Amino acid sequence: MKIPVAKALFNSHSYTDYRKLISDLILEGKSTGKEQSENLTQYSTLNETRMHRLDKTITITEENQIKLKNLKSEYIWVVISEGWCGDAAQLLPIMNTMAVQSGKIDLRIVLRDENEELMNLYLTNKKKSIPILIVVAKTTGAILGSWGPRPKAAADLVADYKKEFGVIDETLKTNLQLWYLHDKGITTQKELIGLMVNLEV
Image 1 (cartoon, rainbow, N blue to C red):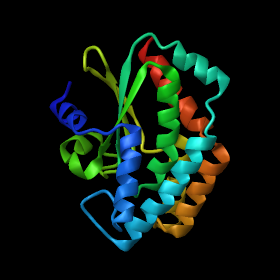
Image 2 (cartoon, rainbow, N blue to C red):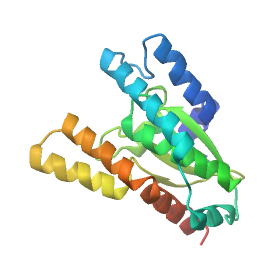
Image 3 (cartoon, helix red, strand yellow):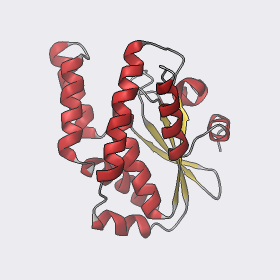
């Protein structure tokens, strides 16, 4: 196991603990991360509502449930996240539900700003985009693959908007959240299942 991953795991959170951490910080008017601002706290509050809703409504398709239960090995999903991240709020409830239903995956969440060395190994276009999911073999500690920061169709939506308008603004953020809403986690499930099945070939 790479040292940055081992260090990150040592200070990692379960999904339940991560949710509690965000909730406790919101009560203090704070967010996770080094930077603190009213905007980031508002994003964290909005994301908490989203995650609470998704925890209740997310459904793993029957086909994907079977594939998850049929995984041969055991894995750790190390996810780099922050409470203010809109993409993470949409994706972590899916990842958690998949991990729980598989019985083969241990989901651990680490904070980006507390794990700079690890984040720098998984930059997207030289940027610290999150969430990033890193697949670790539970028995050997070998790093097998990674995924993120968002499904391909959502990434294309962002890239096309930036190409046309040159900015990431509130309109784009709204469009992205609407994409997640309509997709209902299906694309994310498909991509993550594809990643895991390919690892076992």
